Structure formats: C-alpha cells, structure tokens
Image 1 (cartoon, one colour):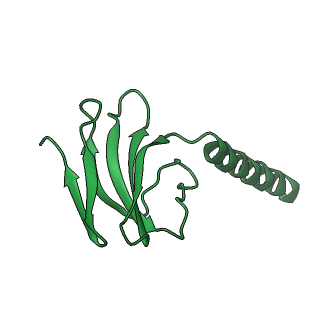
Image 2 (cartoon, rainbow, N blue to C red):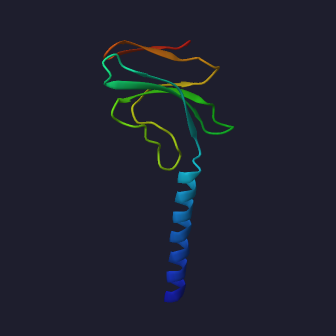
Image 3 (tube, helix red, strand yellow):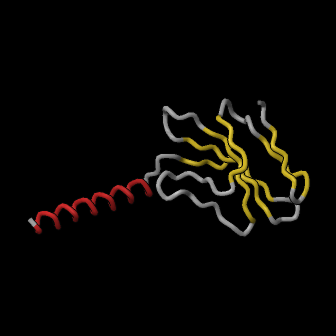
Length: 113
C-alpha cells in the first residue's frame, strides 16, 4: 500500500511539473508591442500592446507604464503582461488606441469610445 501511495504521489507531482513547464513555455496568450515611447524626462516608458488569447476571447489593446530602468515581465503561466497596466480596451479595429506624452508625468490616451 505504501509503495502504491509513493508511486501515485510521484506521478501526480511529475504531471504538475510537466503541466507548469508546458504552460510557461507555450503560454495561452501572446503579447505584441504596437508602440513604445519614453517620457520627455526619460524616467518612464509607456507601451501600447495587443493581447491575443485565442479564438473565443477578443483581442485587447492595453497600455502599460513602467520605469525606464525596468523590463516588461510576462506572467509565468498565461504569458500576459499586467504589471503597470493603466488602460485596457477590447480591440475593435487596427489603431483604435493612441497615446502621447504631454509632459514628464502626463500621458494622454486617445481612444474612439
């Protein structure tokens, strides 16, 4: 009985590790950088990205802000980038969202809705 329990636990742990690695290296969603601009003082970066997660889910445009010294970080399992996300809009057509720095700490976001 003990050998069966150890074998079952080993199979369960192995399956969990394999599934985690599969999702990490083949994420459910993809992120594409559409445009990126540094603030006038060079301290911040605004990035417009398009997120695609497959057929039943609509694509999403989103804008993320980060310090110029930081890199974008993907979620370990689904591949999304949510760190610093300040604006999200379901994508309707190409070029639906734009942004522009008005000053060192003032970002204007333009969208049709």
